[in-house]
Amino acid sequence: MYHMGSNSGNTKAPLFDGTNYSFWKLRMQAFIKSLGYDVWEAIRIGYNASTTPTDATTKKLANNDSKAQNALYSSLVDSKLVKVMTCKTTKGIWDKLKSIHEGDEKIKEAKLQTYHS
Image: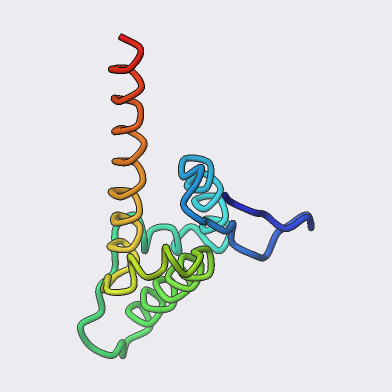
């Protein structure tokens, strides 16, 4: 289940406990974009720092990636965090969650269709 705060202009990421992934994903994308579109780009395109950032552009990319990583980690209950904590990039975290949960939803749909046939 996902949870959003009741304040307008939410400052907390929607919580994901493993249910209603599609709704969480939609809300999480909006939340991350509200942190700055470049923060969303860190997830969508990916950013992988192999060294400490030194120039202004690389520092900005690293900063955006850190914001995205914080948002993702803050949105996951412990049982979901454990599944992605070995991922090296925010894109890796996002893609793994997508793989796990969109795959689960497709399998459930296929089983339901088979059952109803």
